[in-house]
Amino acid sequence: MPNAPYAHPGRTGAGGFPRLRVMRVITRMNIGGPAVQVSALVRGLDPVRFDHRLFTGNVGPGEADHLQERAPDIPVRRIPALGRAVRPTDDVRGLYELARAMRRFRPHIVHTHTAKAGALGRSAAVLARVPVRVHTFHGHLLHGYFSPARTRVVVGAERALAALSDRLVAVGGRVRDDLVAAGVGRAAQYAVVPPGTALLPAPERAEARRLLGLPQDGPVVAYVGRITGIKRPDRFLAVAREVRRAVPEALFVMCGEGELTPGPAAIAELGGALRLLGWRADVETVYAAADLVLLTSDNEGMPVSLIEAGLAGLPAVATDVGSVAEVVLDGKTGLLAAPSHTALARHTVRLLQDEGLRREMGSRARELNALRFGAQRLVADTEDLYTSIAVARGWWPASLSER
Image 1 (tube, helix red, strand yellow):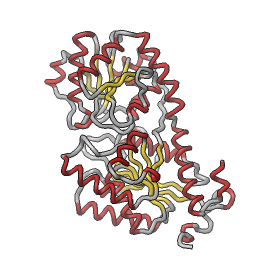
Image 2 (cartoon, one colour):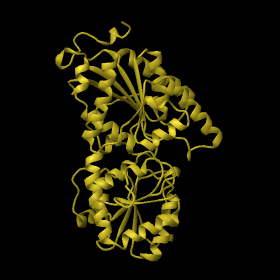
Image 3 (tube, helix red, strand yellow):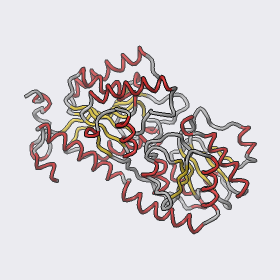
Image 4 (cartoon, one colour):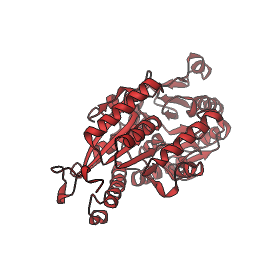
């Protein structure tokens, strides 16, 4: 039996079947959707059935560390060479360190997240002869990130890595379909597992605005996320300028940081109507202070910021890219538009001027997102995926897949 060495005596769960060892690898735990999902899984997977370990690199300059800001309770094993930067010497070292860690831990499953960890982690798993390799696409790099020539290289690499993978996970149906159409894996390899998260209790609106130094009166439009090229902060500013012509009292806030954080000139151009909050651990306070959220990206997976906004009872105005439409139900929990600042501004003005519609959409978003995107659902879906693998491999009895 080629997989027998992975069923160590003494490492059994309830019922006498082996406790499944899962090694989770992510490039870095910077604040963002992938880190939120990984945190939920580390906290939520049943320790009786799973021996679960997280391996990650360090965040880069100017990035906020999710582990420090929001998840100091999560145990982690650091591999510094996993960091975001692509450096051949560091990457070879990272590959070696991951393979060595796998030989020590002897996981049944290596589950990777984000592109660099996906490349090094799956390659190391092949070298270490790990039985099962799983990778999650939290989005994709098929457009909006690189030049056409470099995109072809990236797609070629992902196709090769998909051939080394037993299962592929996509956060949304649109993300999966885009990848399959690009030849990255086969449809049968994929499982769609949407994100899941929860918000901490938020202060009342007035208190939230006081904590953030915002005026008590007037509408507030919030952006939450990295302030980087693919997110199109320039489009966000263009929307703000246009909205202010119709709703001059509107205030725009950006919660996050990045290389394209607006400077003094952009703030001055908006006449003080733009506030930069930086990274905040209490993101629930930002949502509590806002009237709606605005997302202006050229490409997305399934944005956790929109899920969080819905959980906070806020409608969204967003570009209809990636799997955004699987979070924001157009006309029901928010309004979607093409990647155009004019269309986004028109939707934003409509919601700011119609409090009844805004409240109705926000209430519906809270109800639907709690059902569709809770952390418990994410954990349950992931446990089901691992259980199906363990049963298919003969590690666990078939009866477990019926629970």
